[in-house]
Length: 95
Image 1: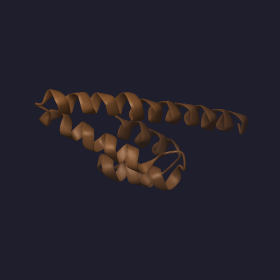
Image 2: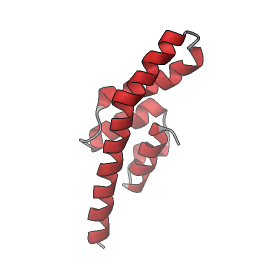
Image 3: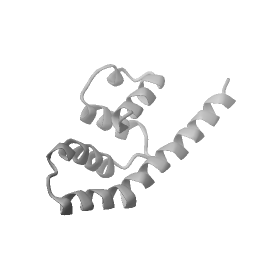
C-alpha cells in the first residue's frame, strides 16, 4: 500500500469527504490539514521520488534515493505508525 493510500484510508475512517476521490497529492494535502504529525515536505518528497523511480537509470541517483529512504522516509513511516497507534487507543477508549 502506498503512503497516499494509507492516508486515504485514515481520512476515510475519520469521515473526510476529501478521501473519496483525488490524486495522491490531493490526499496528502488533505492529510496535512487534518493531522499535525504529518510532515508535508517529507511526504511530498516521497511522492515525487516514487514518481521518479521509473526514470532512474543512474547508479548514483539510485544510491541517493536509497539514502533518503533510510535516513528520512523510514523514520516518517515509523512516526505515522506511532501516531496511528495513539489514535487507535484514543478511539478505543471513546467506545
